[in-house]
Image: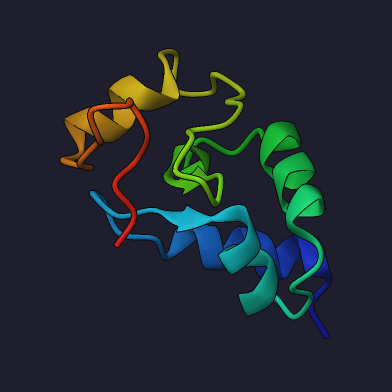
Length: 94
């Protein structure tokens, strides 16, 4: 049986380029809808560059924190991938 951490990593790895999921959506899909903060902690501690941590955002569309693993800001990475932002600078969630 996979740990919650491994489930989170597996889910985040499947987020396609140009798309995002919220911390809460990832937590729910991993089996614990109330563990959005845990997802944030897992993303912050991730050291595997193949895991697109920058594609996980806050439920209000804010980009949230970023561990800098890819060497630039989360917002810049998301914009390069084609993620749309609102005039307020938040991710335009679908």
